[in-house]
Image (tube, rainbow, N blue to C red; front, side, top):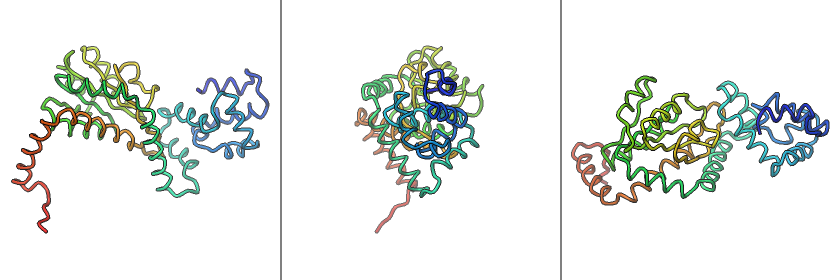
Length: 287
């Protein structure tokens, strides 16, 4: 679904009923809120029954109203401003326990990511990490935290991990200056997408590097550019991007790489434990 499709339906180009055209026009004019409204709420807003809204979703080819709502959320995921997100979240949270709503939605995202993740692509990503001469990891805006965690742990397993610092457009390219066909670029980006995320990947690809995208869907700007993409659900609540499922995917990548580097892990952490103990890096409970 896209806005143009809804606009055409609202103009009766597909011969739907008056009620259905009214629903389509409301969604087209208020898509930033409608994507998070129940069928009953939309029906109430336009003066039709909940069942009429459900039948409208079926007429559009969706498996019930939840399927249409997911499609609308997918459509707008990278489009909304922070102010629009806050407004849209009122429909999502209104009258509910906030922590139960947020945590419940995060559980759904984890489950959806688990069910939809392609194992073949996941294993190819691990193969690419293991065979690369150098790893360049990029995460812009809120995705910076995911890039930092991935880089932090992978640096225990190899010495050639470079996490790009998002200090400015010129500096990003300067950090990528020596990337070549022997290297791997991992670009992490989730809505709202940073414009520099795709440009950094484009630059790495132009230098012959293999490219991996860790993102939310095929609507992501890095999809089609990356050689392989792994998807994790990250639908927003209010102005906050949910990074629970993306972080779980990053953790899975780290553990999978570690499983192929058992001897290195044992040796590395044996040495690190000695350093941590000598310099009292961690609190030690003697009781």
